[in-house]
Amino acid sequence: MGIPGGKTAATYGGPDFSVYPGQHVKESPADYFGAILPELQRRAEIVFRFSDAEQRREQVQEVLCVAWRDMLRCLKNGKRFPPASLTYYAILHVRSGNFFRGLHVQDAMSEATRIRGRSALEGLIDWRIKLDYTGFLRSGLLKPKEKRVFGLLARGCGMKEIARRMRIHHCHGWYLKLRIADKLTRYFGEGFPHG
Image 1: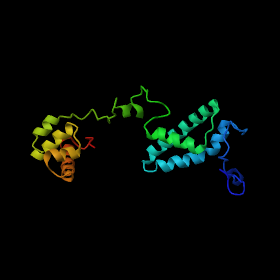
Image 2: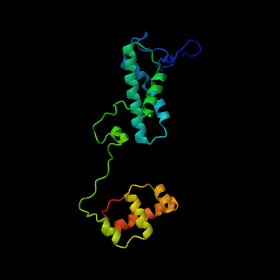
Image 3: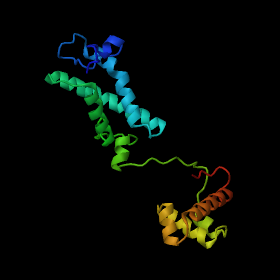
Image 4: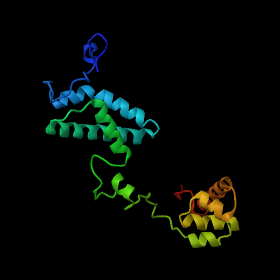
């Protein structure tokens, strides 16, 4: 990967990507990885640019961890590893849902547990509020359509499913959901947590 004239990127202050540790370089793996780190990070950020900011940071860190692990494995086995290949396979690894830390996690809050569907985190409600949904439904605040939407939401239906079942436009379903939220707040008081 030389530059015309027999020069390499290292000549211009960048890491020499044409040379790999374990071949004929005397630097340590940590020094080499530190030299290629900005390039690995840049490539990972480009690939995951459409993720939200927090998720993108997590994905880039996963790529860097996987690339480090793979580089050490290659060194141990005496194999060549261009930085582009390290990045490519690390990105594929993360994109496929695999993680450096593995998926056999017992922590209920870990992303791996959430992905497998073993747990779901929900917000804590204020225990001072008595949630009497039967009383709310009998209060007469809700119109028949709103009661039906409330029942379908309680069963876990999404807005498109509710709109399909009720034969209404999904925008009207969202409108009904907002009206229900306002009525819930009025019935239970201002401290009522709703999403």
